[in-house]
Amino acid sequence: MNEKEIRQGVLTVLQELHEDIDYEEEEALVDDRILDSFDLVTLVTELGEEFDVEITAKDFIPENFNSAGRLTQLVLRLLDEG
Image (cartoon, rainbow, N blue to C red; front, top):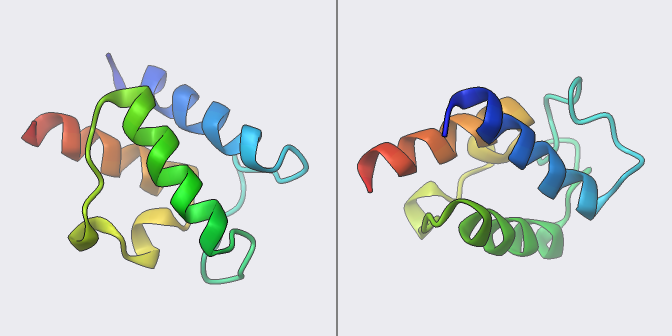
């Protein structure tokens, strides 16, 4: 799976959370409280299932969840480590 495919999968998961948000442009999903704690728990679960990765407590920092690009990088790193 390449970076473009992973990004598309991340965007699909995000759209399922809130279809009214422009995830291509948004850079502060957590910092601006666009995603709440329930959204983040759901996101961790959905990304784990979608990409067969485990997002652990050490990965659960706002910087990793602020944008689709950051989430894509997180998934790529976890796939590489796995």
